[in-house]
Structure formats: structure tokens, C-alpha cells
Image 1 (tube, rainbow, N blue to C red):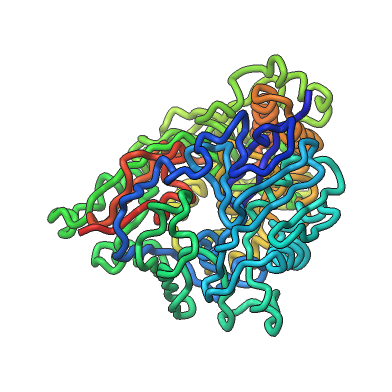
Image 2: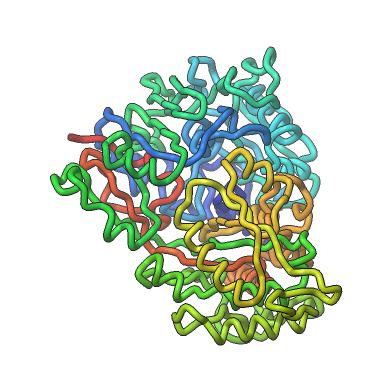
Length: 602
């Protein structure tokens, strides 16, 4: 049986897919996991988009931090994260109502080798850049080669698997891979396409605000002020406005990104009407802090958007490059000392559930108890590389909710002693009498994260541990995390319903010591890489799910992160003129939701 399932990687999102009609190679309008894509050729709109949405209006969002570059395709510089998704297009586009399906965007069709040795894309003749020039085969080839060699690290790994790229006829591009890998067809289909001519006299890898990369998307950057705001305007001559994939999307005339020094300033700007939409991540704030005049008058409304995606991992990552955290018992002690129930009550009124694993809240999450069946079979060859709990079962501690957390502190002391530490004169020391301490590096702007750390510091003090907490601006934070210059830091990693090759970027060994990588905790275990490999070559959906659940066990029992909470809903306060469809994608409020399918209507 052909192993005809594969995955696609992106920044916070993977899409696992199988070529429709894998037994044959022929041009298709889309790629689906099993059978045909749900939407037929010539479909009129995505099921969660409103094809009758009016154009006009503006949406103004707030961001904490700053920026000094408008090129999101290189490592250098601080760039508004939204630009990569709003201002640039790829050959294929995602459907967020079918987590396993991509449809043609710049490409009118895709043809892939059933064995995963090559893929061909055929450009739409009407595809245009924002300056009106056609998107050509040469632009595509230049974009792939440039991004794959000198672009951001997220592009480099997949490019190393490409043996050649060449034109086919007038509008075709064929990529040949150096080994069978069906996933690569999708990865290559999602590369942003840039205009080659723009960079003939400009240095692509230099960061700055002098050059705004030209894309082909519905929005173009029309105004900005360094560190303060970026304004994107809907292109009235956008080439793809009549595509079914685009109908009812990107209809708001202006998308403006405002930047603030901290979260308090951003919230005050929302109260004053300077920004007109804001996401609230704190349940207690959602209940208590939104009773202001614009809300009382009905000018501001409150939307709760449910989703069906995995929790991902949010919490405090321990850097195993640091000697303090190389022993798993020390990491478990730090987890035991973290009084989640008390912190959750203090910060959220106890309403938010805890993250219990990297893929919890989904069908991909590990099951409770010992590994069984296919999951156990996948993990057994790596038994000597696994930490306690991977095979037997691992759960995060549950406290009684009291501030003292005596049981957790006792267990933390036991673990520290087992790791060779002891308390002398109220200070945790190693065998040489040196105090055990570590550096916590946080980014400015999050009062909630600082409040969590303050409570945590009180618990650590009971262990005789006094960490150093450093709060830095966004530029310094990126520099330090790129260099792995921290012992512990706040960590966010979203995952999708279809994780894939991007998992190597998050916790694969190849990225463990690559500066600027997303493997902040330096996860490196042969079982991790092996489970990701199993995911990419699974013969069917059940085998794939078993591989993800096995990966979940290895990561969770690795004790790399002290998890906090997640929300099964997104909370968005916004001006009542901003609307969204009643039909929601299964991903809910995720990439591709706001502002993509929102509209403005008084």
C-alpha cells in the first residue's frame, strides 16, 4: 500500500494532507487528504466566508512592542508578524474548514508524483503583483531559491530536500526532490512569492524600512511610521478578487496595526476608540474590565469564538542548554513548585483549564495512563531514551489550591535532593556549596505574565531558590532568545489539528543549537525525531494519530515547559460595525479569520 499521506509546515500551523487520486498524477485544483477536495473546481466561496460581504471600512488592531523592518522573509529585523500573512501570497491557499485541504491560489493547478519525487505548479495567467506586473515563472523560481538559501530559517530545512527547480512550458514550475517526500509538494505550495525585479538593485537580506517587498496579495503597505504603526490598504485592482477562494475575504479597505509600549496602553487605546478590536486572553479581565462608556452604549460588542484545535503549549520553558536544567528531576521540581490551581484562581477566577499536553483538547492528544497499542509499539524501541512517564503515563501535578502548596514543595525538595542539591541556611546549594539559581527573561508589556512569575517566585523562595528576573524590550528579547541567552522564559507554541514537518523546527535535534530557531528549550531526543518521521510517512489516519500521540508523550514527559492554561474560546471585543460570518471554521479565531473573513458594516 502506498504511504500516501503527508504534511505541510508553516510559523504557528501545519496541514497534513494526501494527494487526491494518489494512484495517478494529473493536474488538480486542490489537494485533499482522502478522495477529492470538499469544494469542486470552480467553487464560489469558502464555506466560512460571506460572499455578499460589503467592501469598505477599517480595522485597527493593537500590538505590544515595536518594529524596524517590513521584510518578514529574512532573519534580521523586527517585523509586524501579520505582514507575512496579509501582504504576500503563495501558489496554494489553506481552507480552515478542511484542515487537510489546500486549493490553488497563484497556481491554477498542481500535479504531484504519486511517490513524492516531484511536483508541478501551473500559474494562473491573470496573477499579478500589486504594481500590475505579471507573476512569472522566473519570480517563482527566484523566490524559492532566495528564500531557501538566504531567507528566514523556517524556509531552509525543506529547501535542502530539493534537488532541482526548473520551468515547464510557459507557466509551469517543476521541483524535483532528492528523496521521496510527498509532504514537500505542500510545503513548496505555501512559499510566499516575491517579485524578482524589485531585488535586482536591493540587498534582500538587509533589514530596514527603506524597501517594502512587493507581493501579490489583496493588501499592500501604504503608510507606516517606524515602531508606531503600519497601514495596509486593500488593492482595488487586486488580481484575484473574483476567485472562489477569495470571494468574501479581505473586503475591509484598511487594516491598520498600531504599536504600544505595554498592554495597559493598548487597552486604554481600545477604550478610547483608537483601535477598534482587541483580543482578551484573561478570563477575569473579560468579565470585569470591559464596563466602559463605549461598551455600555453598545458601540462595542463582545464575541466568543469557539474552536476545535489543540491547546499547543503555553508556559515557561526551561532551557536545557543551561546546566541548571539538564537534569529532568530539577525540571520536575520546578513544575511541582508551580501552584497552578492557586495562580489560576488569582488570575482567572479559576475558570480556565490547564494545558495537560502539547496536543490536549483534541483527538491527537495523548491518552491517560500507560501507552498502549500502536503508540506503545512506536515508543518501545526508544525505551532507553525516554524519561519516566513516557511509557507509563505522565500527568502534571494538581495542588489543593492553597498558597502554601505544601505537598508540591515537599516533592520539589525530594527531587532536588535526588539531583544532588540540598538546603543550607535557607539556600538551595549544589554539592560544592554553590547556590542554585537561574535567570528568567521576560518581554515588557505583559502584566499577566509578570504577575504569574511574582507568585511563582514566592513558591521558589520556600525552596531556598531566588531566580534573577530580567524584563527587556521586544528588540532585546528577540536578541536574547535568538542566542538562547536565558535559563527560563515565557513560551508560546500553537499547533494545528494536522501537525507535520514544522515539528522538526519546534523540537527537532537539527534545530536544537541553531541560533534563531524555535526550539527554545533545546528538546533533542531520538524518539522525537523518529515520531515526527512516522507522522510524515503514516499509511493511514490511525497510524498518523498514534505517531502524534507518541510524540505528545515524549514532549510532555520531557518536562521542558511549566504549562499554564488555555481557553476553548477566543474572546474578541470589537466595534459593532465589524462583523464576521455565523458559519465558523473548525479552527475558530485563527490565522485566516480576522481580518480575512470580517467586514465593516454600519
